Length: 186
Image 1: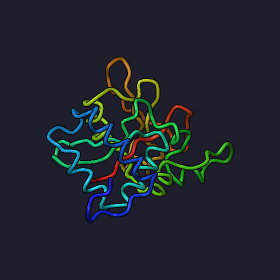
Image 2: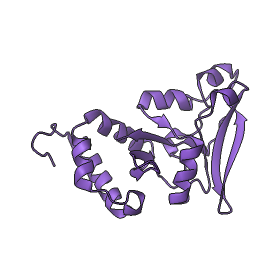
Image 3: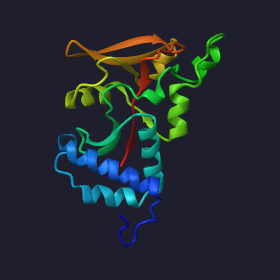
Image 4: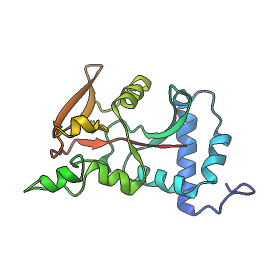
């Protein structure tokens, strides 16, 4: 759909809007009291936002709209497991550079920057888990506080036994089953 005053939609952008609309309507509990028409209007006016959502989709994030406790709206990865196209990454560039052997292709923070997204932090991760169960077989790196990162570690989390657990690893570690969840502000 191209409404009057909107930007010209490429086929890829239109396909992404259709995916987002379907997901929006199926999962209304993630964004109560919101209307697709209002959301679509904001998306159509911002090509860069749609392009970022395309990247989130292509890397397996299955982004959907969420209303946060403060009442703001974000698009965030809600794939059941950590996004497949964003796994096997160490935490940041410093960690990547410190690896002598078996370096992963990139880092969480580098990939997030390239995609134009924010990495989910612990507080947001726990909120998302209150909406629905995620990372039952995988784990996700979390945005790590600077003081913790300065000590060499980075945070990750997962849900097991109907409980969310936050863990730590060396920031230079990486696992085939650990990726990262991202979000963008609407």
